[in-house]
Image 1 (cartoon, each protein chain N blue to C red):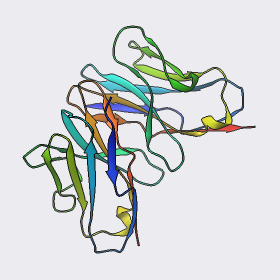
Image 2 (tube, rainbow over the protein chains, first blue to last red; image 1 turned 45 degrees about the vertical axis):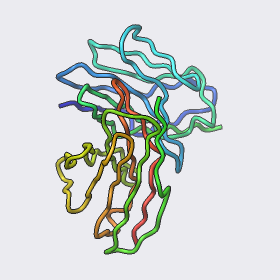
Image 3 (cartoon, helix red, strand yellow; image 1 turned 30 degrees about the horizontal axis):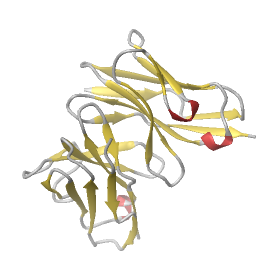
Image 4 (cartoon, rainbow over the protein chains, first blue to last red; image 1 turned 60 degrees about the horizontal axis):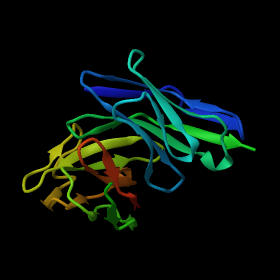
Length: 112
Length: 112
């Protein structure tokens, strides 16, 4: 079985400041790691994914994440956020069984 | 990637009635899944839709309440039966292809 813990339920930040959304996972098998974003009243959009190779993964909208196997973490970062980044962010692990397990989500609120 | 569409996109229903949600993928996927996202919460897997056989349900979900069909590799339906206000949620369909899941835009259901 696998689990995902998003360490911060809410992250308020001022515009143009850097942000990090933290995600830890546990699994007894190899996993793939994903970050999704959900804007208000919209569906899930894939931000980025780690499948293999380089542990630093770059995604859309200037986001990046680093896979750390020893710490079982996959934290999401952006050096300078915009008002439009205000949304719910979900970390997820995916196994060869085809299922995704999601964290509880982090609400990012960017203030002017 | 795969493009997934769902119908209806939203609906308002009376308690005691049933609603069938359709999910169409634009190309073949290995597996299809149904998730529920209750207001302000993360995604919870309801079941895996198996082609030509009964769906595999997660703990807490039963076939009588959420009957699922998957007649072919690109189409599935989820029925929410005998609805109550507690069933008000977003229902998302997803498809798996190898090492990634793709999500539909969701069906926003409100039960009065």
